[in-house]
Length: 129
Image (cartoon, rainbow, N blue to C red; front, side, top):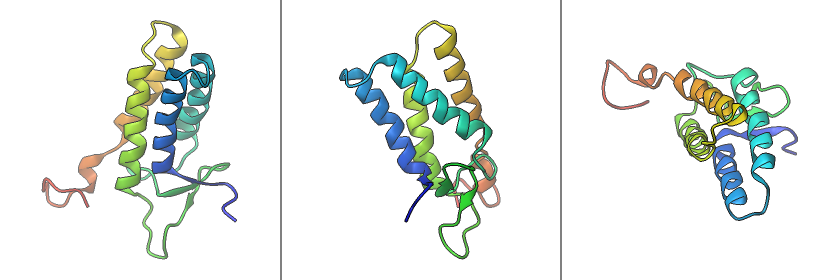
């Protein structure tokens, strides 16, 4: 009964699958761009984040966190890293010199740049918590 539950890390893998689907001719580049625009707009404008990091699960309609456990504080760095990696792959792939892909890259950059990785460290240690 997952309904509208979306996993942020799995979405990163899905983003990379879109790139592969275009490369292998399963979908067109314009279809891939359109799908990515929808995903990126949701992540940028709707999805709930914590210091820029995404939760493990989100409601795919509202963007509100679906708690992973009773003590879930929201941010999931592993899932966020998978999502960010997918976005970075897409950013590199969609490199055409046109308004659509340029705006997509800009939106991806704004999502990536919002993650405050240093906030998830203790006492400036070089370890994420």
